[in-house]
Length: 606
Image (cartoon, rainbow, N blue to C red; front, side, top):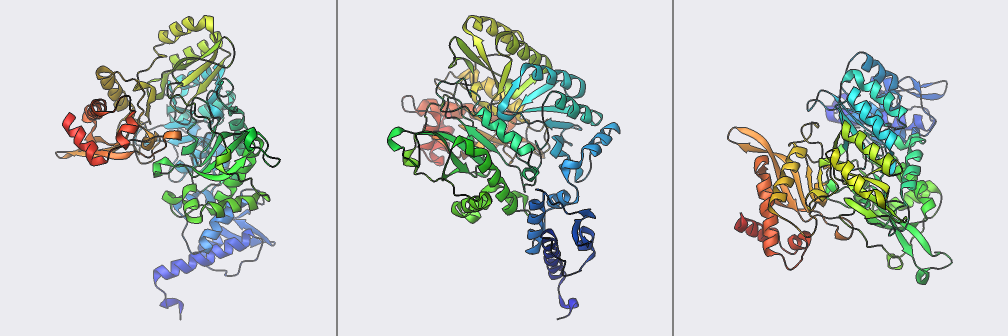
């Protein structure tokens, strides 16, 4: 059959196949066979017996496994997505000089450089704002007052004059002009705050239990492990070659959940008691390994059966990431998360690959031999609470949907220094904790918090209120989530007093940064037709949870205009209060009924 007999589609397939095979052979140090095509030659050549990529020597270090994964993809006849091609053409970790030069020229990135610049933590968020957002890496959410104060000063000079707390116990600066990008990066490094790998296809901020070391009910401190994982990532370049983003969390079994079951890798502390111990399994605290959490895709991290000593966690996490780098989908961004590898391979095959990567066998233990802590307190991140240390308390400060003005940020730094030990701890609930307050100083701290316009008490609605950035700062969001979330909270507080918290999660798009599927009530932004116009609105879900109450919220009402959503949520709460049994929780109430019954109750209450 002649070359001319092939269809254009067949030609492209064969070209991709042979090109990918050439790259795969070059990565392995073998000669190229095909000698085909200008595109392949532009990307790959062999000089003096050594393979090159885009005219540069093929890396011999840890980046090689990502290049091999790209080559294997094309060798199989599949087409890399445009983001993978961009990463292959230009290593985003090597763009520092380019970013600084653009900043000096008062220019924003264009084309695929918008994507690649995220590796340094800078997100060009047009058209929502003609500015950068900068995301950071704050392992375990632990900061110090001098860093907090420095962030406030930096935001006043080079950003929007405020700081946002995220749902990964992290911080963002927004409204950064093009000419201030370099100043932000320099300023953060001078505050010992890292941005490298905080965006793009990387491992995001490693989270931990925010009461680590001060919670008398925890099984083990976890902030130290989040820090160790953080440094492992920064010092192993193969940790930056992922097909998509990746999340890791450590939960110590204490009163505030780290939401480890919503992460790609979850480490959850458990106890092996004397009665279950053996020579092969000594008594003590271990971590259960769970994998594949991505609640935006309606899946929680699932148990692997693997039980790890605390000192094994970082090494195992590194091996898991390497296997994901090699096996993750590089053709379809929607399927490029760890969950889909696990769905395709199954857990046994994946764990076997991790063991092969580590050249060891991982410990598997029957879950029946493990003791779990069941002490989570859904209000423990708000208000004053006793610590494990004598005569010491911590305070959970209420932040309006995670936003602080620069003056409030400085004020909190002053409180942490004057009345605590200078620590400030961020939580996944978009608020923060100031620990180590002496009993005798509690009243002074209350006064100081109120003086800067913040609070330490929250209603059952405000305590669990979470909102993403929304359309005011994110191009993907279909609604102004932060503003709408506050309107909902105020409306509910004016009508109801509850005896238990109800978490309300408001997210702007399918990326689900506010994790709407795990809220008691979860809202996701949409557009609603009103006459000839399309206006902001929401789909409303109910019945989500995490941990012991794990569940994906189910859709109750669709296409609710944003200006009606507070009224509809109030009707949902009212229907619950009118029809619950005794002190039945909201989730228990909605989950014992099917959706049609809930809709009937809602219609009767409206």
